[in-house]
Picture 1: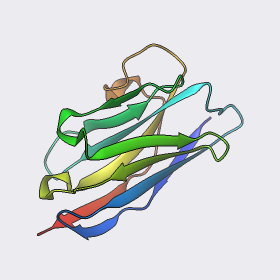
Picture 2: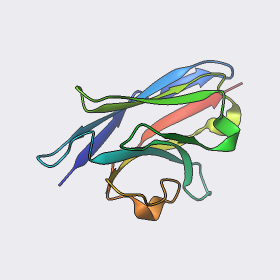
Picture 3: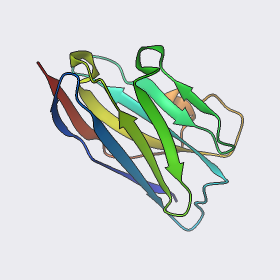
Length: 126
């Protein structure tokens, strides 16, 4: 069983920056075997894909965050980061981290992930 725990959420003004962290643990977890993704869910909206990094290092982004968000991983620390710059009001949501056992399945679909964190709130204000 793999567990993931998010941290780093908070409140920030529009145009500001935040960095989210996702720490993975579990006897079977290794960075070479798992891909990691970030999703978000705003009130009364469906959960949507934000960014992902595959086990081989390939990265993927939601179009609206390209150029503003960067996903990275520290394999030694078993941690994935989401660096968020130039935040907008519409980025306000609960952000979730998820892990997918090594495969070539889509990383943009929530249903293909195996483990989820509890989420961390990001609030962007004007």
